[in-house]
Image 1 (spheres, helix red, strand yellow):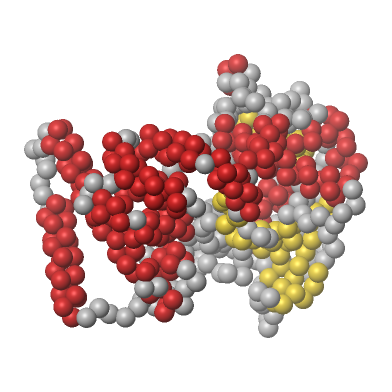
Image 2: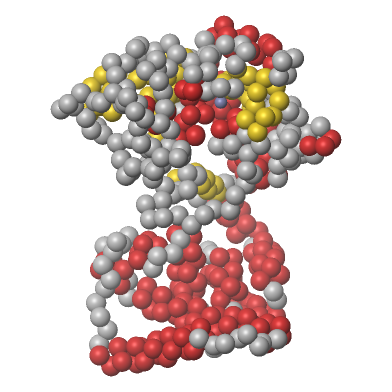
Length: 479
Ligand SMILES: [Zn+2]
Ligand SMILES: [Zn+2]
């Protein structure tokens, strides 16, 4: 966190604190008001009036940011830019911080814009569009400033966005070509892992690069799913955004597989799971060295109360971070698994050999038999599929033809994280024996969200670790 800069002098402070006090008093009055007898139109009027007040407050904030930025007050706090200071200290998203600084600079640099904003004649959202659309167009903005400021409040936000697109492209052909170059220079792809076990990707590409990516997404999109009652997948059709997400993962997976097949060293997906969380019996994973001992506990989520969270017993996916137990259990369904014995969180005592859970010959036989995803109604082809254990090997299920089936990634996720369960019927077809709860709304997270689930208490007869060694055996997964 950045330190917040020096205090204003006492006169300024008095005016400022009086103003802020009045605002807070007003908010407290509103919050305490009894609105039980209000009509719908009273409430609609309040929504609109609050919008106007918050608009004025936001305009004031833009002005304050402009003045603060003009004296580069953020430098004193060690920040590299005004936006990074705001994103850390405010705190607001980086995108929002950039937008705020851009708008504040526009309002300071262009007198007419600043005055209209302060007087409430130019709404803040319109000023933000103006700031974005006129980047690198100083000369043209000087020429058109008056007419654009007059035009803005007469149009809705969407219409003003469209108008500014036209203004920008019509303004100058030469500038348009400079834009294309700028788009290429400023190309970027970034990713961030979130607290909620997601990876957020952000891309900004030039026109040709963007068209290539869109073309690839469309080529890997399997098209709209049919409804379950028309023979489509039992979990229902996906949205277009979900299909594109599936397409993106699939095209990356295939690109990595091709690269590996061509002999290039290619990183797989490596994960780490504490063996006690996997709930293994002393037999361990199929095909592995017999471990010296296991500190075996039941799976979390049973009737036993969870014990305190222990950071050494965790599920972890390389380059993503902590993930849910079910994610690694799914990856372990069809992966190379090896044992790592650790002391504490950093010292590796022993590295076991990695072994493929599903041997090559068995995989060939399963592929030949299933020829694609076996989930009822799914038509995903064989090269989109992983081998799924109907009864997981960690629960004692064998790795053989009877207990294994192909599932595409979508349905493999459904059968682990989604709570669905498949089983083989006597005639050899795979059927759904349990449906998952369906998408849930996210419950409020307690402090420390994103931490792995705490393990359950151990069953009777648990073998204790060797005294003096805090050895936590883990499985190292490579999907
Ligand atoms: Zn599986
Ligand atoms: Zn499928």
